[in-house]
Image 1 (spheres, helix red, strand yellow):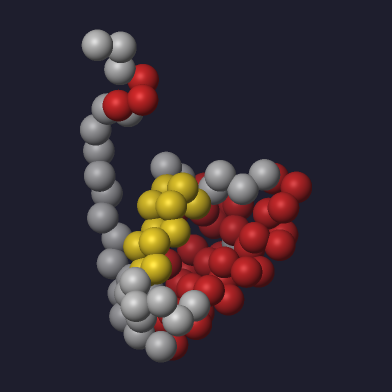
Image 2 (image 1 turned 60 degrees about the vertical axis):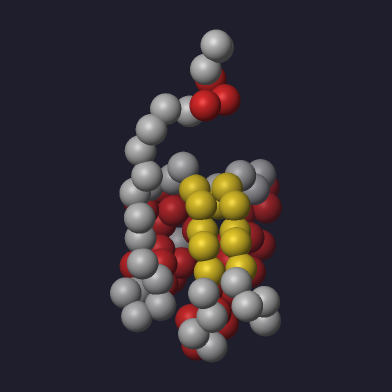
Length: 84
């Protein structure tokens, strides 16, 4: 929570059986980072609708809060699927 910069990679990779726990911890993390104005990078393949469905409205709403977070959509091919 107190790191100068926190990077949360692959949001949505948690097993579905752990989503309730993940939702509560993830929201607490987002909320604390936002209150303390500490930067955080969240990488995911999920759309905002999928984040809302998996982690709840509180998390998706917090991620859309422009005072705390800024979204970037990166598009491109999945390099793991390339067969060069």
